[in-house]
Length: 202
Image (cartoon, rainbow, N blue to C red; front, side):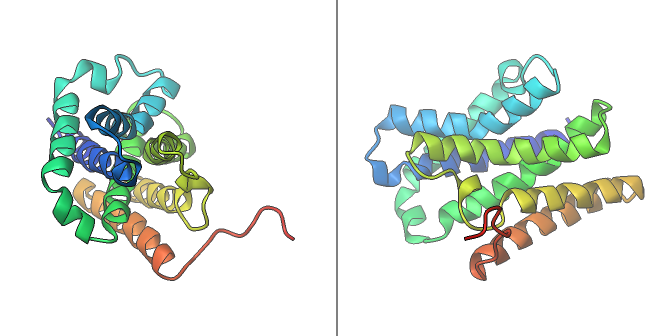
């Protein structure tokens, strides 16, 4: 097992928590919360693998993915009181999730021999689609469509990883720099209300 695998497991775990927490105000039962957590955790990775023609899908082949999602659901249930006290918990777990999945998706695409530009897009898709599906299931405006820097943060982090890879930077350092880039841009964009310019002007 390599570092990419552990990153994918941790990303799956935090996205499962993100999905389960998203139904807190919706009065969902165990089934609703579990389904949302599951779709949030595997949605982006599934889209990535389908587009890259990479089969079998990771979560179909590896039972550890399912067990990791279950752990995320249980963590959300047993620690829900503590998590509710943290106003930015959903933002934190979502940010960790997109950072991890961007890196994993980009690296997996590179490993399959695709063009680096496509690898960056695959990394972004891996990261954002879980959140989009989560918000759709909970009847929220998809986070990708809201004001702020979301997909742009993922794409920036993917570019950082590609630059490091081209420069033959040590792999762990590449992961760290890309992760830091994504998390910093995302958190600062929320803190200071950064946003990508509007496509249509009033």
